[in-house]
Image (cartoon, rainbow, N blue to C red; front, side, top):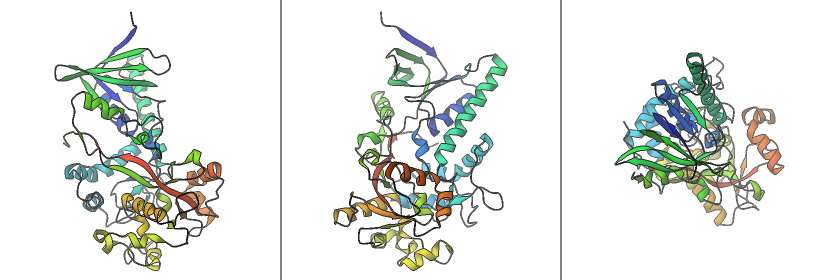
Length: 399
């Protein structure tokens, strides 16, 4: 007879990225026995690819920022196809989530007066991205893991068992959600190392499995991101919405072939980097859509002034929303103005001193030096669009 490992929990969270860990923390703090099931190693999540920062209208860098402006930017960036209520909740609650991460132990970069530093990013009117250099996602995962461990330590003090109320099942793949009539009753899967089956009995299952990036040849996503949660939900009877909305990050590595698609953080452009074609031209000025024209500079001079005087100048078009920049890069390459390896040039070396680049963008400096033998303090990077994120998923009630 086939051996079946069986466990019973109040809540099973499938996925251990930022969303999954935060869901598990909430369930545990509400007194629920909770399991976290992750397909890969605990902590190996695409959340670490949120390198440039997380958006929250705290107003630390510009006091004019508020949740209403963030909401407007989000709706405009989504071409008003967004679920307006979800966008509203996101804009309203984002500052509290960032401050909450601080209480968990997150160490964000600071302003001179000690507040959380915020940087510019594509599509955002004001500097809004709370960040830790260019390694923000890594700090988010570290912080949430640390919170999980602290809750397990609390349980140990009370029960003598670290895993009494919160346990992580790493390298375990869920293949099916179980139902009792119309109600979810658990999840079934297998241990990746041994192939042995495992079953979780639970009246509540949270799907936080990440995206579908490995459906595409060029992607920033790791091997795990194969749409598992979407398939699990759909086969259990859930409705999937907006699955056609795939985000291509405009800047991924293009050379050498072994690293094609690895993310090049948007903070390179947020900190002054510019996009140029093979003719040395800053081409983004030719790709500003009418809906954004009033907010974006028409000349290089105005765009460069914006970094020091954002109140009296318009933004550089390199900071348009990602879909606009990705399409522009694709158009330049198709028109024959791409780099030798089929991308465009992203140049920060002519924009900032070398020591400033290595301070603000340490991961990018090491990434290009080690993987492509390119010194980004002295020469431009070759970049092109890479599949990064899926907006679609299981339809849920925003409230």
